[in-house]
Length: 390
Image (cartoon, one colour):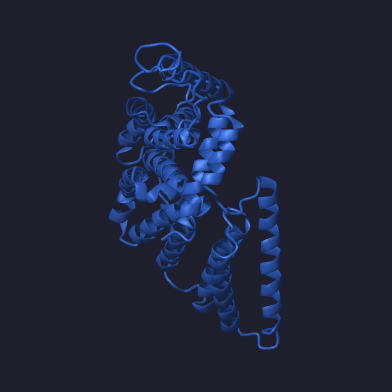
């Protein structure tokens, strides 16, 4: 399904792991060169600065081309004509993106990202112009979800993963908001249930070999799912969004329905994340849990002013530092294979595979034994092996 050459992606991953091993002085530069020669990758992936420049340059070229096409519609002035041009540009930029990946071997070069973002923007804009923005919001959300999902599958783009997750939740929100009061009440719980399902799905997919090229996208999907799972149960978000979007009229001192449930979730979820992260050896759970402690402190402080905001946030920061320090101290000694020292540790199976390749490359050139300095046989005396000469 992915548009990039899978063999080249695998070889590139091996090279990255070998470079990491070289940086840790686990292998020599000569061994690294041998590995790169054995597993070549012709993907074009420049550094971050060049990538950003190519992204901007590609956008400029696409927009200038679009502007030239729009000049043909100035005299006509038809909105449908502009919509058709947008759809045409969306399809053309997508085809160019596929060609750049397959023929020119671009991989995260900036050009592929600019082309898929342009393609998605043109197609969505063209559809909105043609329908005169009169379609149901659910239609636009589903179209965005469809486009973003396709781009993720074809290009493994992390930014499109964010769009895909946002479009998924927006589709659910648009679907439930038209069902009346009951639908509005269950929106937070629906967001939490869908986010939990998404997290479990992304976690399962990340452990499958077939999805090895989507690792970054799946990690980002897990982070987003954990964040939206907490957002769906956060008291501040539920209460304030209910007031702003549903015109909920609350009197001073009045609470939302089932407010205690959201208070429990607001306080418990970050702690559950951290606890499960330690137990499951999951860095994403630990990191998101630590971040959400700040959201928990802010929510409590917003409704229960026990101290000035500066003092509350300072105490919250001290608490986060204390938790992080405690975790580092707790994991300083490896516990059940989990330690705080492995900053860039990969999955165990990947490490084993890379180690096997390194050993294979290192041992592929078997050492030539030195010349035999102790030739048996011959001799000038009697006994076994003597040549018979005296």
